[in-house]
Image 1 (cartoon, rainbow, N blue to C red):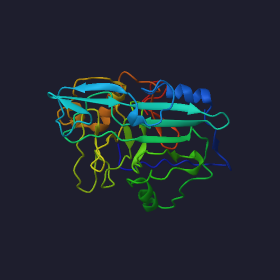
Image 2: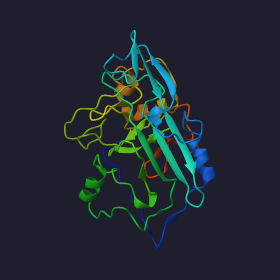
Image 3: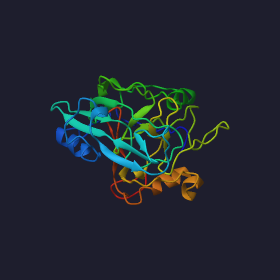
Length: 286
């Protein structure tokens, strides 16, 4: 895991490179089926007002940190997620989530549900001849990639729409299959949260590699987490109390996919593209 990753595509003897994606309504519905939705297949008016699935945590929360109801030492909150597809010539995917997972996080800080609701073109085609940025120096690349707000704006070709009543999260990169926010890979200091340069402290997360945002208390990931596949009422440990996580977060992140060592959907990006886990369809780690 690095602070900045630059992927260079060399076009030798070619005037045009255009990637045609699988973006039919059928493709979109297949993708949506990977999400742990709670809405029954139809978009809801307001995700916060929907029923959701209860998660009961007997440890790890107080009356002040619980994002739901706290009674006799038990915190009960609701995971709420709805992913739906529509359209034909241009297929659109709508993602609605309150950001709360299906497990009990270990976060000694307040958590709150957040109204995330956006619609975007599903898996839009990409033409590398029309980049969103055209950096010509390494410093220009750094100013783009090593910037916590670098995903605040979405490429126009994605036709991203923030729906009424939803919360604008400039650091949001996408939504995990369990409805948890996937934030920008940078910390608030514009460095890698887990391998920070410049003498910054490593950010504190739980063993699912999640923690709340200090600005809005939204639980989120900075890296791929196998916990997205898990529903549990048992509180997880902290990363520091989990030897493998505390030793090397990057290696640990990959290890959480030991039961999913093939091409696996783990979320949808804010620009409409599918996010996959750390393995190819041949079981090779990327």
